[in-house]
Amino acid sequence: MSQIPRDATLDWLACLIAHRSVSSLSNMTLIDDVAAHFHTLGLDVRRTTNDEGTKANLFATLPGRAGAYENGLVLSGHTDVVPVEGQDWASDPFTMSIRNGRVHGRGACDMKGFLGVMLGLSQELGEHPPLHPVHFALSFDEELGCLGAPLMIRDIVAKGYRPRACIVGEPTEMGPVIAHKASRVFECHVRGKACHSSRPQDGVNAITYASRIVAFLHTLGDRIRLEEGEDPAFDPPYGTLVVGTIRGGVATNSVPEACTLTFTFRTLPPTNAARIEDIIRTYITNDILPDMQQEDPTADVTLHRRASVPAMQADHCEAVTSMIALLDKTQESCVSYGTEAGLFQEASIPTLVCGPGSILQAHRADEYVTLDQLAQCEAWLRKVIARDK
Image (tube, rainbow, N blue to C red):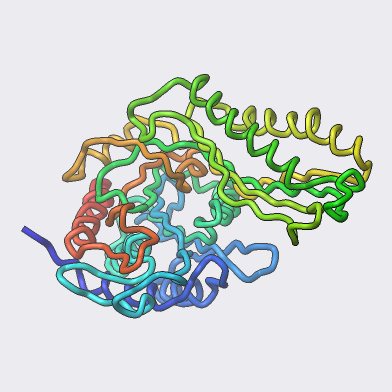
């Protein structure tokens, strides 16, 4: 039988969806609204920002009954969403719409639904504090490669809060995700020398050398798959390397001076992602650059790592297994996409990924989360928090 979430959850979800917190824009108005709410509850509120001061994480703590900040539970979610351009929505993506038991809106599934649940619960928790503290963590730029969360987590560690557990509320259909792959995202700039195509010997063809890098990456992807082996818990059960974009050249009759490509690799949790990156950099340094600079010493290749998301390792400690035991769906799973969970784990905080909505609905037109899943999430978080009483 379907359940209905509390009005407080839906009110917060409507507010969050109305904030156009696309990753390319500031999230400050959303953070301001949430911070104001937490201040009315008397919570300790901390912010960490990007270098420009245009985006912020928010970390708010409801102390335990004895006033303690340590040994608490972190409820974590990201505030940024992906763009809507080019998508055909049946309703305004930044106005919450409820149709046939589904809450539609950009971010409803990924992952403002979970944020709405945890903010909706904050009022009653403020009125009836639990035994141990509850921390509310909202990050920026998760969709760009988990860029904001590391700043917040470093602050948590520096303050000595030592949370006993963390829930990252990504959309898992309220099933427990205990592991995910690591990922690194790169942008590679190849700079050659332009000239007329009738005299290619006078230039350095950036696209030609970029194509050699692409071919190497394709071979490396196959090598990763063979060397890693397979883990059937993941889909696909092996590491991957994908070239996502490539652009270069200005005209057919010109030798191109510049070419840029982007690529991502994802590896199974045991794999050393840094070693894969070293293999790529070594190939560029030892094989590509000498050939280019033999043609012209000013030719160059730069490889910029845009994002690095650590793997989430399966952790069956008591803090995690006790939360899983309170779910209606207890079948554990592993996923190939990345989350902020690996970052919390690196800070020695036991972490579980679990939240309302399906990843299949994320980033799509008419994105939605069901009312039933929101209600399930409410009930589960209450159980997790009440377990300490």
